[in-house]
Image (cartoon, rainbow, N blue to C red; front, side, top):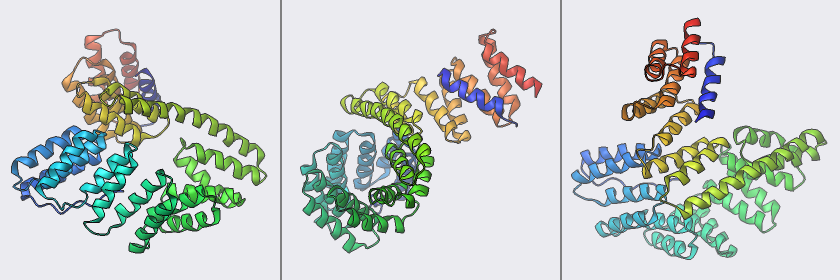
Amino acid sequence: MKYLILLIFSLYCCSSNEKQTENETRVNPKANRYLLQGSDLLKQHNFTQALAFADSADKYATQKADVHFFKGRVYSELGRFAEAEQAYKNTLEDMPGYKGVWNNLGNNAYRQQNFSLAIDFYKKELTLGRATIPLRALGRAFVELGQTDSARTYFEKAIELDDKYTAAYFNLAQLEEDEGNLKKALKYSSRAYGIEPENLEYRYVYSTLLVQLNRGSEAIYNLKEIVRQWPWHHGAHYNLGRALIEAGQQVDGKKYLEQAEQVRAAQAKIDHLENTVRALPDDPYSYAALAFALRKAGRYNDAMHSYKVALYLDQDNFDIWNNVANLYLLQGDTVTALATYNYIVTRNPALTDVWLNMGVVYALSNQKEKARNAWERILAAEPNNASAQKFIRKLNNN
């Protein structure tokens, strides 16, 4: 908490002024509106509210399959696989041929590393019609089982249906790289990257293959850009270091190799915390600890997801709420940060740190009176609060 307050204070002092296509909704318009609003909330990782809107939709829906399917998606995002499975089963009871259910059940089995079961589910999805998503998913599951010939076949079948299906080209590139077929891998990765040049993952694999083929000088620009956007990515630092050394830039190359080791150490901690949340799926503090490590690594979107899961498990944990507000601020979303701070102090007006942070954000937004009110609120309860006194003095001097 203190670190985040100091971070916000420094900002103030330095300031001068793959998604499965959903089935078409078969519920009445009012239920449909609730599901659409729920989908927007799910995109924002507001899981509790998303489920609440699903419950509202359920009250008006005459045909419940879409509601059950949506609930399954929310529980899947939360990693609550038993609840997701029940929701998907409810979907199939209402509509046995509902597209996407078997695929999503397969995804959940895959995430739990039950790859044989995932394959069974994906094959059931294909009985409803050939589609690129379950074909590619089958390929990925067969890769995990070491059955690369079967995996290759399914990736190729997906591409036969859609010759611009970049994810399948990408998976083929990874498969061929693992098999040591670097030129083939480069061909497939070039295809994926060529179709979606803005996709950093495709860009990274294409660039690392160039490095492995002793064409590192061609990858330097791309790898620098990836490191800039993904500073937490160990492989990008490592391969950039290799490419620079190959190009004769020894000093810079060694610098990136050293950074790669630092990033790998941070990732090892994240891996440990991810194992912890898998072992303790009902512990909000485990998710909050993972979120903090992800935020520290600069992986803000992943951190927000973990914080929101923690809040689903403990809606009244104001420390987590405050961290969520601070993360919105780090992402540049001042409006949502302020709304979250206001929500917290409405629920618990005695939280000094929240009033302090909220005042700083108001000051940065040039809303000086609101900033003053927030800090004076602190001084009314804690007349000797040094941080609030300092901020008010600065406000008076501006």
